[in-house]
Length: 502
Image (cartoon, rainbow, N blue to C red; front, side, top):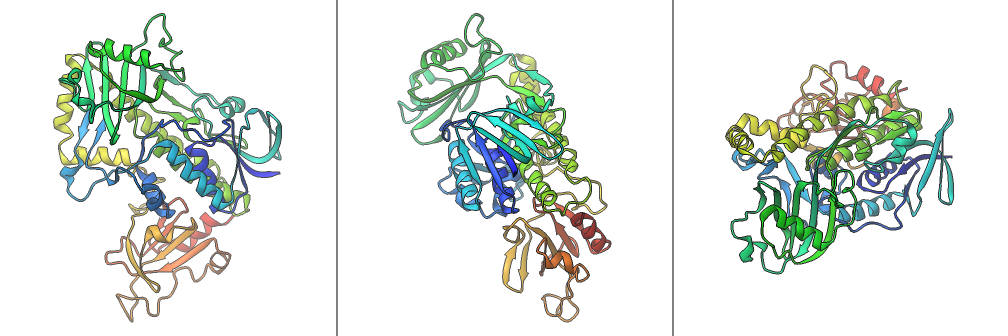
């Protein structure tokens, strides 16, 4: 019997495979596609997933050749600009521009390096679970697994087979998206583009997006009401094939003139949805990524979905290895579903701001532009988009339940930082207390966890003594997904024992 079978080799499924293999779990990924896709359905990562890639030692590899990687100077909230450059060096949102085909290829390479198996052309047909495991049957295969995770997108068969509801709404607007080889150095060099601006351009008939992420290629998107009687009608647009003629017709309807878009590289259509699964677990079946949530505005889906997988992986591993405290698997939904609900709320607000095209919408956007220029709301929105406003639990120390700060440290092995100590995805206990004999060093340090010999000895807990110029607490207990489980030394041995033992 396999330990974990993942359905879907998109970003969420591949990231989960990487995290499970880091934790020593046998993992198989089943993907109905015959081979990796080449459609740039997403153009980048934003939020805490960028920090998590740094924790895993992957950020440099993933950002190689990227048009942009680092703190974001700005970002749209719906159609209202956020100018994070006004905050100086303390920018709350981090971005990594990387198109989905490259992201999936790099995650696939990493999963293979760690020993995960990805089986292409394996379409799941049915799954059934019992007290011992889950039986999966599909085209030419039958598998038994102790646990199954559905990372198979918004139309998840796993979710359907598990009987999990997916309530929400479907937009009445259609989005056509295309990547084109530019006929000019810039699309704005065309005479027909007179008056058009980079970003979204509004007309009474809809909106047109024009932008570029790399030289020689531009991106165009059209939002309009579904065309009655055509393939663009509500409910029929998502996933339908888009021709260049259809795309050009939509542009003409919105701006009133023909725009020379150039040779199409990729065309697609979609209808935005706002949905959240009733639950993230049914027995031995879990959901992650788009299978669990769909957001109506961009910039959040991959961040939330990939962070789902980091949360779930170490908990499944602890359970499979016999180390999990009672109820640990249930904390996956308890922690991650509220995050998705929170994201759904602010992406609904963004979608509404984007959708309003009349004078009332203009007035609302103008007012919010003024308000969002103020430091406090600007920082708050940046933290919301980053995901750094997330806190698990209500422990008294302000760091507990939050993503660990990347503190600069000095250990017996030399300078380092928190992210470098998290490469192996183990539990990490940082002893940050100064020693009496050498307040700024490490001589004579007594390990905080000296009475936790079994946990330290079997490798589940790594204890590191370090000097920090401004330690936020005497000790930090950091989970494998990068979140602080406990801060301070008071009650620390009891906390470690509770969190790491069955």
